[in-house]
View: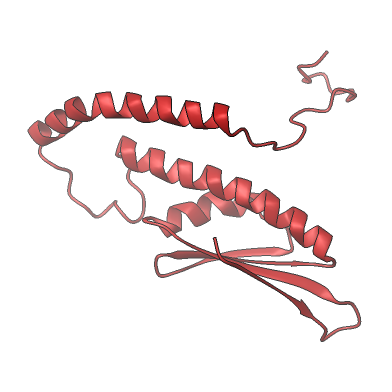
Length: 150
């Protein structure tokens, strides 16, 4: 994912900025999946087949942290879009497309069930071989009654 970082010196505080542009089959769906996780310092828009997110932070370390979080969120958004596409869920980009005949759908799903299982197994192997540390999932010292670590 190409990213560009620069420092804006127009105001009294230097601000670190990054623009991340990624291409997708359904950029509207990916952008909608990303926006709920955006902070006030982030803006996500679509531009053709691309999702463009601009991040502005007060420091490069803050920018680095936000970009790291964004990349994790982007991976999830891409998985959501892929899963929706594979499940045949209508998105804005596909809502206008006519559905294939039932016989074609049945044949395609029967032929692809084995490849889907293989793809799921490959994805599980990849996660096991290359785990990603996303940080603490739940704080163990919280007083919340819904905490599962009690």
